[in-house]
Image (cartoon, rainbow, N blue to C red; front, side, top):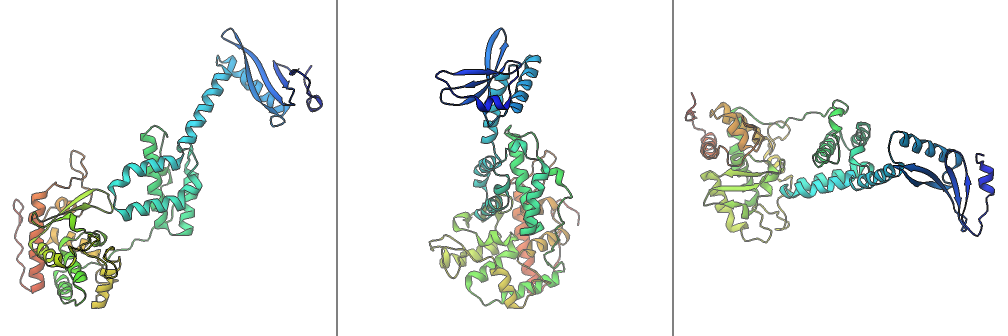
Length: 409
């Protein structure tokens, strides 16, 4: 006779455990302590077995019958319900271990040693603020595009579309690492193409006319600020690195005898090499007695503390004091565009060589994206020729552009 809810509620414990039977080998086990436990008796591979289905009243009569029916369905398919239960528990345990935050922290531990401190700090801050509170406990194998989109739209509202796209990039990197390590089957971020608000493109002002460049160089030469800032301002056009990379230059990275500066690029996290022209070496040699002995190790320390580099605003603030409009004439970052344009159009250098010196990815026919020593001989020659070209512009001479060896004029 089938059990009823009333019979279950009225069942009182006895001196020994006893059973109340329902249909289909389902029964309720009542212990002397008063616990009421659902059990299912079944046979599999010739052996009699028991399957625990939960505790009453957490699992009611109707739910217990559904669990019984599911177990009988598995038996009909030749599966052992207890083995399926064990596998499911193991899967849940693995999923709990492979949460987005756990995978992200593992990815960070492997990748961040090659990044600059500022870039690594930005990645960690964005993950902690915008992602971990909402996706951190989710198994990477179960994260779907709508969940990611909700996180990104929150970042849009709280900060900006630009930040949301940075967050999307980081989520995709973590998810692809999860796929590569066998903890997720796919990266959901490509499905979100077109779902975010467009980012307003801001073009850094940068002159393309050599006469405008010459005027800027003369203004920089006339700067009367501190020797540290003056040296940094003079070096930036020569090296055309990212301003943050120049600010964070350390003496230990510079080999003046070899005329090289080796550091980790802030944007890509890869080792980068900048050949130093004679003019760049001379500027650094003049600066070394002033800052080479200071405890921070910075080539361009802050005026407030030798333990910190120049501030992020140092270059553009100096430009504005000189009367240079950073909204329409040039910004510190704009020297990269100036070099890219003039090296190709005025000095005739191959775009791959220029892009490699800029630290950009330049895949070759073998698929290699970047090697800090690739085109090194050409880059050494190019950096010296570039410095000489800037000198000629600054001095107001007539620039005669000679063809690069192996290239037509």
